[in-house]
Image 1 (tube, rainbow, N blue to C red):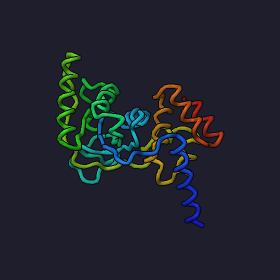
Image 2 (spheres, helix red, strand yellow):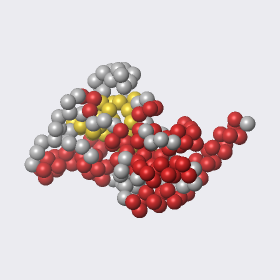
Image 3 (cartoon, rainbow, N blue to C red):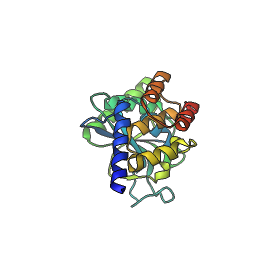
Image 4 (cartoon, rainbow, N blue to C red):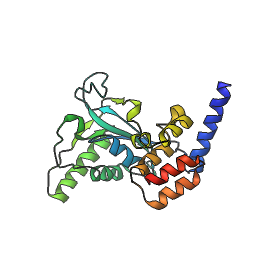
Length: 224
């Protein structure tokens, strides 16, 4: 019976993703950014077409096994997978710098502005675009650019925070998606929309494509 339920759940998830037009591409690229509290960037990037999945965590430090209450020298970051045929790394950097005050030094290392590059190309691109940003704005950027050494996924209660903090919705979607909740493209979109990102037409199109319980749909409409 457990296997049967799991099979039905997997089928339902696949159906939701397919109906919403969010079936992941065969190949994705990964980017990691720090921009203050990770709840905000998680939602902002999750609403972007071309972003496949998001997760929040800790990176940029040396403390082993960081956690929220034992962060050490790490920074809160969002890590995202995206379709490079639909979004470029440069596009993501533009969105990244538009989401926070990149010219001010954060009060804590936990919230610093940082681009964590996954390879040399990302590193060189981030440095070049940071210089262009400074030239354009006439201000120095407080954004660090470093190579990513490790990423530790944050506790589950931090993942998709906007949805988890929405009555009914978070619980219903977690029950439906199970372990696939954090990595779902649909969930990433809804988390972004719940935070006010995305345009009305984009939100309406996704909701129309999803077969969700009326209570969930009503709460999402209220947040949108």
